Amino acid sequence: MKQLFKRSHILPLICFFGLILTGCNDDEDKKIGVKFESSQTEVQEGDTVIVKLILDNPARRKEYLTLSVQAPSSEFGVDFGIGNLLTLENEFSITVDKDSTESSFTFIALMDFKNDEDIEQVTFSVDDATEGILPQTPDTHVVRITSVENYSDDNRALLFDGVDDHVNLGDVFDDISLPVTISAWIWLDPSVQDGIVPIFESQDGMDVYRGFNFTTSNLSEVTAQYGTGWAPSSGNRRLRSASFAPIMGRWVNFTAVITGPTDIRLYVNGVDVGGTYSGGATDPMSSSSPTETAKIGYLSQNGTIFRFKGKMDELKIWNRSLTVYQVQDVIFRKLDETEPGLIGYWNFDEPNGPLLIDRSKNTNLGIIQGDAQRVLSEVPVR
Image (cartoon, rainbow, N blue to C red; front, top):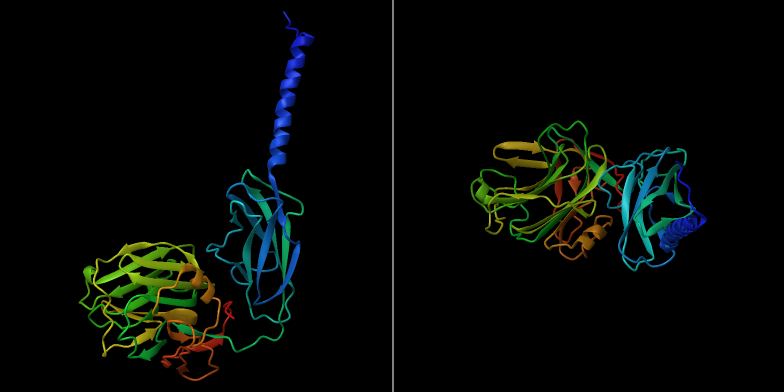
């Protein structure tokens, strides 16, 4: 028998569903609208700009925005980069702090040293947001990178062949103690094979662990290590290593802050990447060894010699511990001898010759060994 609904039954149902729909609309109305501050930015290669998203009202809690990247005419990681973004993904997230009315990210237009090229275009879209945020139209922002026809040739890097190239700095840093901060921009050659790829060492090895060294590898790993002045064993050194997304064939900045056995911080492009400690040393670092020399792009360890293969630029060393905010500042700046605590700074900008000038107050000259080549540098350091 067919079931029939009386009018008196239907009206409450209509009211019930009406309340549900009204509630949904109320939820939408409670969401805070967000959109890009502007629809387009035009920059030149080498520029750094802040792209902002503006909220209609202060965020009621911490929110997240997911943005997509489309770059049909330029290459992510070669022609442009996103500040603090370690991986080359077509999506990334940014935060909106509680009570804030804006969020932002840094866009870096890299110099690719190609003249007379077409304008490169990168489009950002808001793909998703947490439940308190409602993206509004327009929800895209276009960055246009214009070509620079006459490139300056005064920003250079060194190209190491991985066979016999390195830089000898002589008998320096014999009296250094922790804390130490070291930073360098590197471009690792995609053909690098398995093994350690050295960036810097303050004492060139022999049969003991002394001083400190800074290395990477083709396995996308960065390591900072120091020794206590005794024969090689796990108890006579201390190090921390961190892994991350592949960095072969693109410029990245590595920074290490070594303060003590339980405080070694590793940064990639200014982002703390954590890492794993190893080595049992708890004694202070021993740096005195008049028979050993500091080297760039070379490491002698446990009887094996490792060499750097790729490009390197802007090697900086401080005898103090930099904060994360200081790291994020100095990696993008040219420095001089007035920088507090700077004890070594080689920017590789000499036009020719075998010497590298130390721009710190210590003026420690480096001598190029092998046939390392001076090449134009694409790093975003100004």
